[in-house]
Image 1: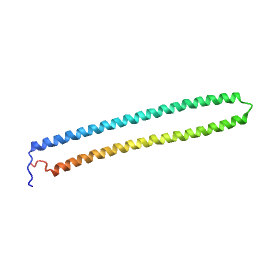
Image 2: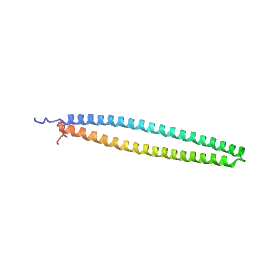
Image 3: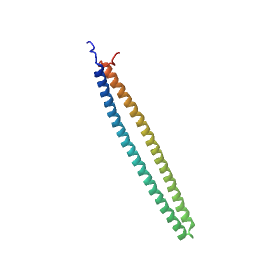
Image 4: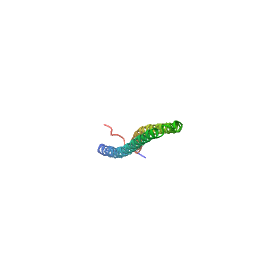
Length: 143
């Protein structure tokens, strides 16, 4: 098979088409990244709302324990047992918050990994398109 020469105009047209396709792919990837970023932001807002709800719940629990302390001053042993139970609940909630922080950090790391992966994929696609064009005989014009 003999290589057919490609005119400079044809080469430019092919390169322009490739650039156009690459721009369209990049726009699609940017749109996906935007959607992922919005989803991540929505998830973070949901988590912040849940944290605020838990703070309100803690405030309610604290108010309840103050009432119990005033009402049951004569029975200190029962109150101490209840207070120990509350401490265990607080420790459990602290562990729960720690898990949420870990999940948020993990999500952030996954997003970073996703951005890097998408960049590598885009570069790979561009290189593969260039290689395919070169294999098909679309070579740069010689002066």
